Amino acid sequence: MEQFLDEIIQDSPEKAYERSTRPRGTREYYANQLAGKNVLVGSVRGPGQVEVALEHSFYHVPLKNLSDVKILTQLEYVAMCQSRKKFYDPAKTGIHWVGKVVDWKVLQRKEIKEIPCRPGTEEDLYVRFTVEEWKRLAAPIALGGQGIYTVLYTSKYILDRALEIAELRLETEEDIREWREKRRRGKVKVKLDHEQYVDLGRVVEVRNI
Image (cartoon, rainbow, N blue to C red; front, top):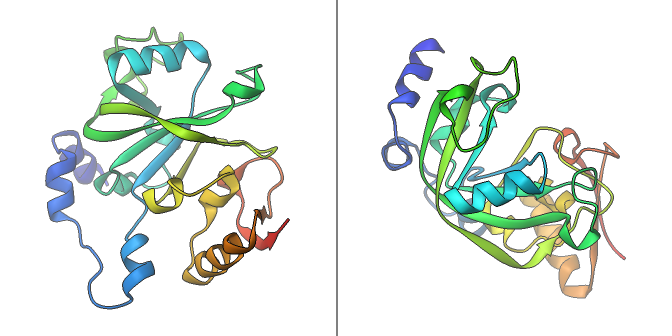
């Protein structure tokens, strides 16, 4: 693991993409659309972080929040989730911004100069993503009464179509197919086995509402 961390600190998304294994053959539609989790959705500490992230085209997250650091080799996009606790205006909650990753580095928190670090975190390892351009979603992805505890991984295919963040937890071919079929009939509700945090739950039901 230490060797891998050394490699990724010197790596780039382009090299990682070329090195990574991509699905082939004909499991076709869903296999192609879900060829790995290529989007990281992370929380933000408040409006100030969003403003600075937009201004400087970057996003940062504690390395310890990543369930497996190898996910860095396949991430192509990052998105910011704005919680009810930090954004009091309901119109500003949810996922509004997504950006394409052009570079990332593992740094000590004190090396990220755009936002002052909290006392005691100076030596902590963070991932700093450089974003090509932040793009505002045409329709924000609603919280639906839930939030993100650390980070959530999803595919760009799902992100582009989700109406609520629970939909970002759709993972299996079966769940995706059921979701698509029910979406044709109208609004869809994805139920998870964790009431508060989407990234801590799993899909237990997909139904029309």
